[in-house]
Length: 184
Ligand SMILES: O=P(O)(O)OC[C@H]1O[C@H](OP(=O)(O)OP(=O)(O)O)[C@H](O)[C@@H]1O
Ligand SMILES: Nc1ncnc2[nH]cnc12
Image (cartoon, rainbow, N blue to C red; front, side, top):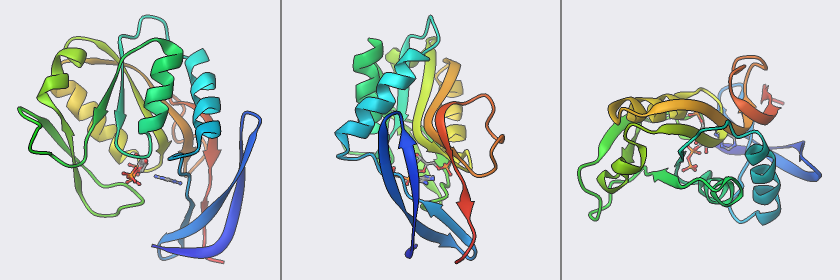
C-alpha cells in the first residue's frame, strides 16, 4: 500500500477531515479513514450513530482496531455494553470463536476471535455490529459468522462510512460514503 499524493475531504457532522488516498491494488485507491486518536471525530460519529440505534438492542460488537474507540464512545452514548472482536489470539484468551476475513486495506486473510469470556455477553442476545468503514464487507461477514456461532441475532449494522459503489450497502446505518478512486 502506498500514498498516492491526493486527498479526499469528508464531513462527519460539523467536523471536516482530509483523508489521504492510498493505493491498495492496481487502479484501486482508497481514502484512509483513521479515527484512532481523533476524539472529535469519534465523539461526533458516536453521537450521530447513537441517535439512530434501534430500540431493543442488547450489545454492540466491534472489530479491533480502528473501530474500537467508536465502540467505546457509542457504548457511552447508547448505554449498551460492547464487545471487541480481536485479530490476534492472545495467550489470555480461551475458548474463542473464530472466523476468517480479508479486508480491502490488508489484502491477506486474517482471523477474527471472539474471546470465550465475552460469549455470555452476546449468546442469545440482540447485537448491533459496528465498524468504522464497510468496504468489501469481509469484516462484517466475519462478525456475522461469529454471531451465528454464538447464536446471537444481528439487529443492525452501523458504520461511519460505507465504501465502494454507493448503494451497495442499503441496510447499513452509516453517516457517509467513501468512493473508491482510480489511479491519478
Ligand atoms: O469491508 P472490509 O473490506 O472488510 O474493510 C473494513 C475493515 O477494514 C479496516 O480494518 P483494517 O483491515 O484496516 O484493520 P485495522 O482496523 O486493524 O487497521 C476497517 O477498520 C474495517 O474493519
Ligand atoms: N477507507 C478506509 N479507511 C480505513 N479503513 C478502511 N477499511 C476499508 N476501507 C477503509
